[in-house]
Amino acid sequence: MKEKIEELSPLALAFLGDSLHTSFVRLYVLNGQKEKLNTYHLRAKKFCNANSQATALDFLQDELHETEQKIVKKARNAHNKHSSKNFDEETYKKATAFEALIGFLYLNRKEKRLEEILEKSIKIIEQTQNN
Image 1 (cartoon, rainbow, N blue to C red):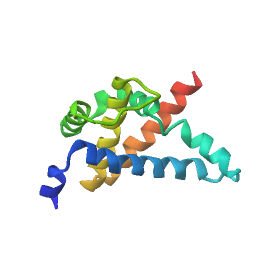
Image 2: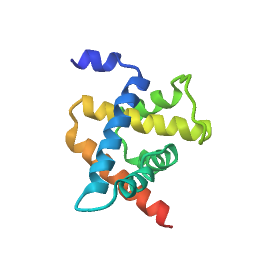
Image 3: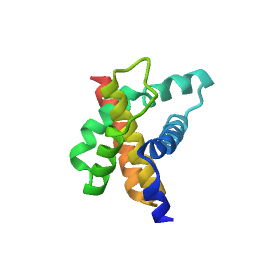
Image 4: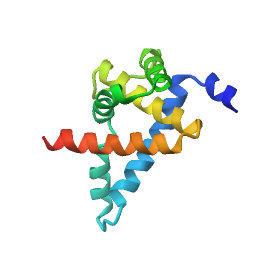
C-alpha cells in the first residue's frame, strides 16, 4: 500500500485532505453544541476556507518534520488547473499544501500526528481570527 500512496499526486492527497479537514472541523463545531444547522455551517466556514488553511500552514511550517515539509513543498508547486474565485493564487496553493499534508498523514496512518496538526490548526485559526 505504501508504494501506492507515494504514487498519488499531491492534488489527490489534497482532495482527500480537504474532506478529512472538513470532517474534523464539523466534529469540532458540533461538540456539545445544540445549534441550528446554519449556525454550525457558519462556525465551520471560518475554518474551512483557503485563507484559514494557509494561515494554519504558515504557523505550522517550522514544526513540520522533513517528510511533511517535502509533501507541503510538492503540493504548493503542483500545477492545478483549478483556481479559487475568492483567494489569490499563493493563498490557494498554501491551502492545497495544507490539505495534502492532512491526506498524506491519514494515508500513512500517522493518526497521532494528524490529530496534533488538526488540533493546532483549529487553535491557530481561532487565535488569528480573534485578534
